Picture 1 (cartoon, rainbow, N blue to C red):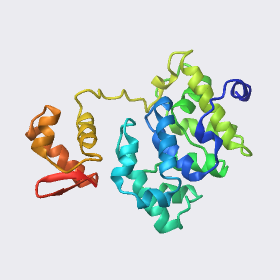
Picture 2 (cartoon, rainbow, N blue to C red):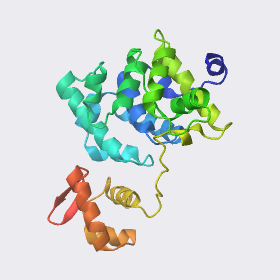
Picture 3 (cartoon, one colour):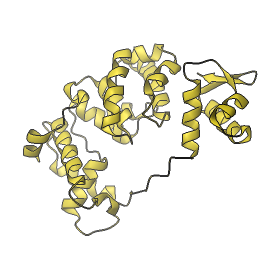
Picture 4 (cartoon, rainbow, N blue to C red):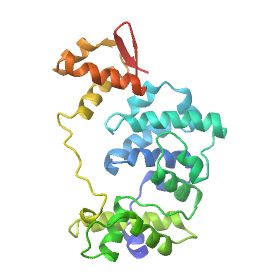
Length: 258
């Protein structure tokens, strides 16, 4: 695997740094999003917000504008809130411990462990889709409904504890390479779920609302509905949901990005 990594390892901008903030940004962006879509946005985002304090000071609308095209906008909101907490609770420095990282908004177990490993060199075991693919392929041939709790002990035992960042990068790249050469082993995971259709979904409507409002003036729900070719009755609960979640603020029937 290490040999494969030396010959075919992907040169990615977040692999050229040990800056925990940049690594945190990259890990949040990479959740459920292809690397090719992330690279350009990552560079723009860390140039605009080089540290947690810069993002915490900025209006959320500015962050969302640079998030355009990545989807899953809750990640951007969570990252903005995480930056605020990093400044308030940790003096502007991304915390080192998995527990402290996991206490930040929008940061789950995987992201916390990934930051700890890639930024701080901590030998902590975690699973993502490429890692899961490798272990199911080699350690569970023919078995169905493989649970992550069966894989984690194997990761613990095989992990390079001196250089976990390089080991995980090599593992992920090998898993990505493996994806095009065997029937996807992740279909045999107990956690495998087919992604819901995006076209016409509630998630698509939420994204369209935010795209229309980011960087612009406040609008009424009826105006948004006409611009999107949908009904006010269909859009109204979505707009109010976005307001309740903290994406939008409303005043006198008009809404804009927070």
